[in-house]
Length: 98
Image (cartoon, rainbow, N blue to C red; front, side, top):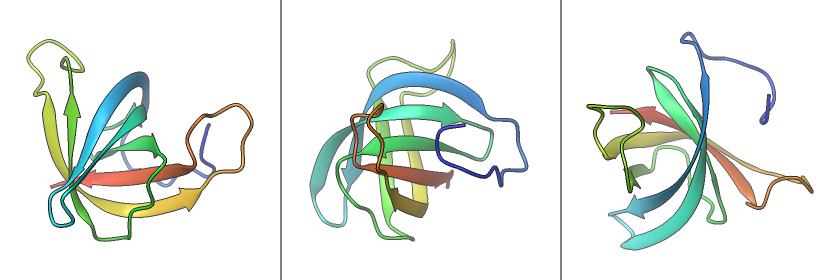
């Protein structure tokens, strides 16, 4: 488990993929790494901090699985600073799908 205690109701699936994180309201684009996903949301690593409640779009260069979309809309549920030597991003971000 990468980011601490499990609070999800849905099963979590580990999946590593580079993603583009778009904060439309602020007009920012950042790259990050998807860590895992569930039917309710996903966890990504990012070097940008996101406030809880921020609406973002996550874009993949290929779908997670056959027939899946390449863009997901969601809301930041939490963003935590990471102090880890084995992970290249500064923050872990929990996103709930809209």
